[in-house]
Length: 262
Image (cartoon, rainbow, N blue to C red; front, side, top):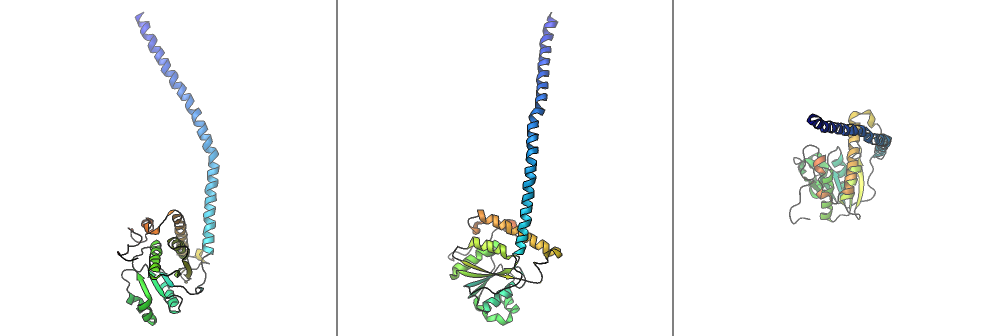
């Protein structure tokens, strides 16, 4: 009798444990089915959204390339100042020519390499030595396009300018205008002067791998700048320069001005 009484609970316990295990095993697939079916229903929508996004990027890229300037044109009317962004061929030369033609009172060359002196710029433009000596300002602080826009704003405030002609490469102009629009006020007027060279042909860019890589990279940077400026209040507090620095990691967008200087 003792043996039977001790075996009964063990049997019941075993049956109970087995019943619970079988019940959970039977319920587990039933719980997974709604999740799997929901994922399967959402998958076509996800693929459609991804396809629509890729199509929008492709169309945007074509519009971006289509709007690039194909030929150079003189600015419409005169401006208070002229700003040239370094980094491309002919930018500085074109800007000095505009200054000599009277399209602006002063010229700012922003993003100048520390090794480039005023004398070297004058040597490359020997007929404009006097003009370079009196009316050209060199900015060594800007590290990228965001810094160029910040230094342009500082320079315009220093000279009380409200209109400025901007000289940069045609493929770089859209992103430059975004950064300048973000840095300047609504009352400031920007007149673009895109530089067109034989090194980059906007009509046959797909024939050259370097040209295709250049315009694709610039399009991506343009999109990043557009999105960033939608959420960023002041470019001088931007941290994006660390991510888009070209040669070395950038710790600041532009070096701070000395105290007492506006």
